[in-house]
Length: 407
Image 1 (cartoon, one colour):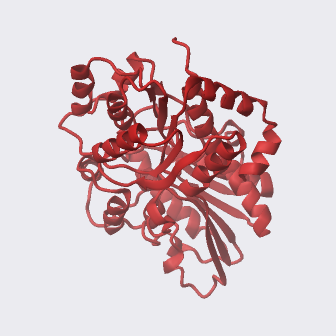
Image 2 (cartoon, rainbow, N blue to C red; image 1 turned 180 degrees about the vertical axis):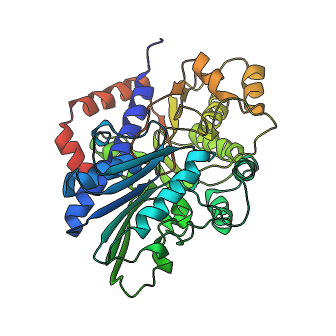
């Protein structure tokens, strides 16, 4: 493997700092303690970050607490695999599968099983929409899969997709929790949607709007981590290691090629420093798309635009550690990542950026991160020597001091 430049090492370290600030286990554990939520006796966790979130709750309430965990395949933490009172259902994402329907029924049964004195903690993150479903009407699983694939391929935003999902579901849009007849519900969400609207996080599977039973005397909901949380941690890191922040915005809400052109122009024409961007681009897929998600395509598109720019490097990656139907989070590129134009453009046209990035040692893989707060683009425009000095400052930081500074 080629030596990773100082610029690339810095943007990766910045990304990891942002992820640490929104990691599900620590966020749930800390917020439960801050909010002084006591005596929870049931836990329902759904989403790609649900395993880590469930871990955080069990750190507080004990690993024998009755719980249901619904998450993506291979996303269950090892510490939860031996819990006697925990039921785990792993299912398909981004396309739902048979286990997604099983998970939906399990969620209904779990909520219905609550006794009159039950105090339920609901933990939700992005991915819940595909991972758990109970269909209304007579839609088949195959029709659901085709419906989901079509929405993704045609470039709908997550809010638009989740709005449509609610129309065909018996559990989305707050319908799940109307089956609860216990005493209280506390809902913590890690947000992967614009504006953090709980009606659209996991297609509103934890929306308390339909909880109307007389027995439920307390309902509380809170977003405990979002894209801003991650970006702010990166911003604070930049201040500590003396890198100017030129941009820190949640603006990745457009077609990825429009976003790519804008980022390239800002980097080439803008001043030296760090550019921190968040959100979730859209992309229209061709027929028979190749391997790679929107982050890999965006990284490759930007790499084309910054070719021969020696002082620019960036990471484009999903905070959940996965990008579309792949096992990569995104890409890490710089001005020297560019290879023959026709091959790069061909890869983009075929939505096949993943193999191209991997061949050129630019693919970024992390595995599950325990969170899901949309995507991050972290771009650094800085000389190699300045980057080296900044990286030295980062590596000398006491991790406890850094954690407090970015909390």
